[in-house]
Amino acid sequence: MDHASVNTPPDAAARRAVEPVICYPNDSLPPPDLSVYRAARVGARKTDEVRVAPRDASCFSVPAGGFFRISSVEGPQVGDLNLWQAENLEEKFFSGKTRAIHGTHVTAGERLWSCLPFLRPMATIIEDTLGWYGIDEFGGSVHDVIGTRCDPYTHHLLSGDHYHYCCHSNLSRALARHTGRPIEEIELQVHDVMNVFMCTGFTRDTGQYFMKASPVRPGDHIEFFAEIDLIGALSACPGGDCSTTHSSDAASCHPLLVEIFMPEDGALTGWQSATISGYDRGHGR
Ligand SMILES: [Zn+2]
Image (cartoon, rainbow, N blue to C red; front, side, top):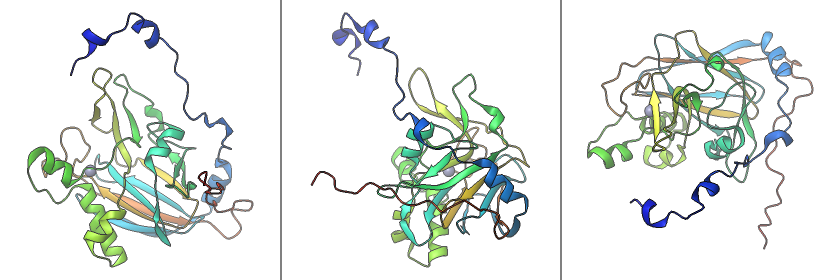
């Protein structure tokens, strides 16, 4: 509905001209010491790997103090990442607050935070071979925390179709396999994702979420340090490189590789696993 003609106040231009302020100035957050993580990574040894098939998802486990690397292996492909605290699936990745703290897209030196009431870093990005991309002329960037995950419910809402290999379904199947719990129960733990390698933004004219062909190429990778014991799940999105469509079998899709590395004993001297929020949970009672 267009209210512009009837509701525009005489000082509209002045109101629009007010300078923005950053909602969450993050300079009070101590930055992670990447040199500690990277030094520990040098002597780390690979302990596991998982190859995620196209239009499917797989789970992986990473102990606190370990590393996991997600790599493009055969062709441009984006991945939808979920994270849970290994002992308690109620503590899961909080894309909304991660976005509020770090911005719409994340890269090396930034962290993935867990949901309330935990709110602690789950993982820290230590390396990103697409960090060079920056923000393009369309406002697009890589590795977003603004998308949700492609899902069959929204697809059904918009098309009436039933498609079973959206990232939401892939992640649900993977977590059901990993936990041995029924899919209709476990899908409630699947949450908004970090879109690994996906290139996205919001259009300036309509504010709509857009995607464009990912700049990822085989060999590109993003690597994380696990701040707590983690279960991860990664879906190789049916959108492939997300240059055209998703929620169908139309796009060309490729696998993704997840590798786990553990540092040598004593390599993380001075590092401690993240503790949950210190807020007393009084809530004004
Ligand atoms: Zn997807």
